[in-house]
Length: 113
Length: 113
Picture (cartoon, chains in turn orange, cyan):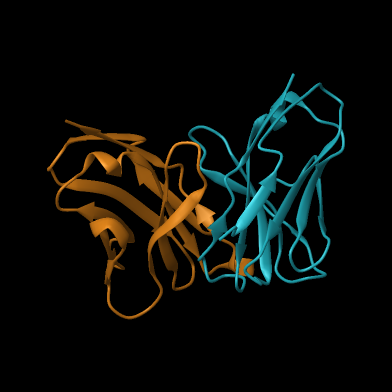
């Protein structure tokens, strides 16, 4: 069975600082990996995805993530945080039985001015 | 640009009452999903429909039923609501199952007293 672990339910950074949100996955097959973002009172929207090929994936709003198979990780980064980045971020994996998408518990990002 | 539309957005029920959450997508997607979101638990899949005419259980199907009415519409029914079903419910769709690129509605907040 597939699973996702997001380290840190809350992360706080200063505006302009590096954002690092951690995600580790478990999968018995080559995974597809995703980061979604949820702004208050909204649904989730796709930030970026890894399927095959290049392990460094660029997404919207300056975010990127690197697939590291040896570490079973897919951490999300952004060089410089902006106030508008404050939201909840979800890592997700698919590719197993039924190809269903499995989400992590989420990390709430707070950006301080 | 409607995307995925859910109704109602808010609902309060008493224990034992029934209700149906409606979901419609206008993107001609084949697959549709119902998730529930609870604090600290991420999103958990209730039911999904890989294609019109098929439905399958997800991770937490007990207490729910679904109907894929046509390609556009996928409803979720609570036959006898329980306080444990207090949650935010999200409908999502994707072009094909397993791609992971889900498009979400804005959510339906349900409270069961």
